[in-house]
Image (tube, rainbow, N blue to C red; front, side, top):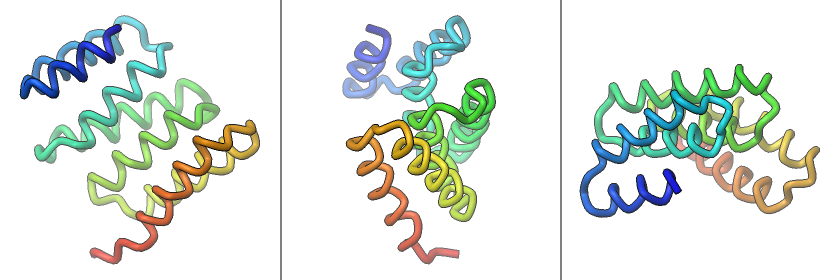
Length: 126
């Protein structure tokens, strides 16, 4: 319900409220990767560099909490890294996410991650 409410707030142009809601949920329930991944993705989409940096930190912490065993957390972290200008790290993290999703038989997620990985690799910005 929190994710849906946050998305509705974002669509209403109330992104700061959506981020507050996701931050609070993620802090209260750190084991809930759905909340954390939602927070990372919303922060990664920000035009504010500090929020994109926060996305990387939150994503990397989530990956560490799951002992790098959650493909969704790895995928969201790769997105955050890419949006923060950390292309090399994003490619490495996306590869790790793809390997994990494939090993776990998550074919739809693996296909999604493969597409993201191709985009990160094709981007030649310095």
